[in-house]
Length: 75
View (cartoon, rainbow, N blue to C red):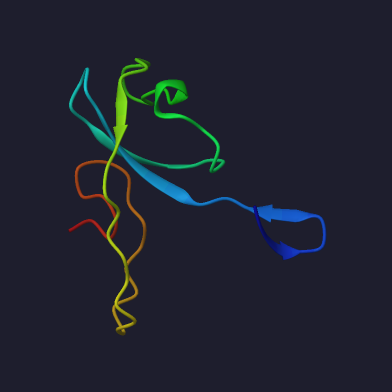
């Protein structure tokens, strides 16, 4: 796990798409969480699949993390 302060653990964001309802969403969760354990926040099914995340290129565009069809930055 990543540590950023004494006693605190950082958790990464993961992007998912639900195979049941088709919605995509972003979750902050432990690196050890398996896809089959992930519950869709829209339909409560356990049929979510991780998506390839978009990464920042170090530019000056400071987009905000979004939830829903826009994914990261609403794009």
